Image (cartoon, rainbow, N blue to C red; front, side, top):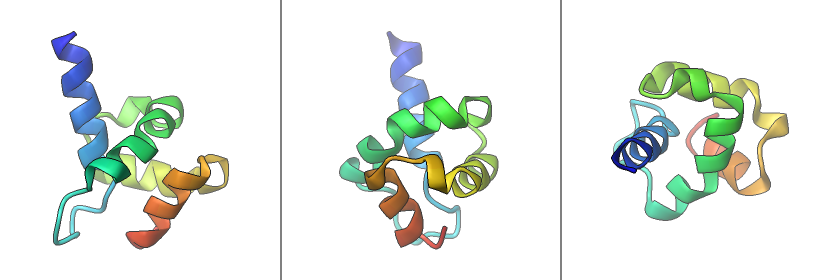
Length: 74
């Protein structure tokens, strides 16, 4: 259980570019949680790679996650 919580937090933090001034909101974290683990699981814990992966898969993302990625420059 602790591992899945930690993984979810790492996923959520990796959704937004490292250059962002503020971290992701809880709503943004939840919007991309499923997409990040579905399309980019191999990049968990690697924010730059996760960001690139989400941008590369933008057409496959859920509407909510796509909006989050786009709102942060992706």
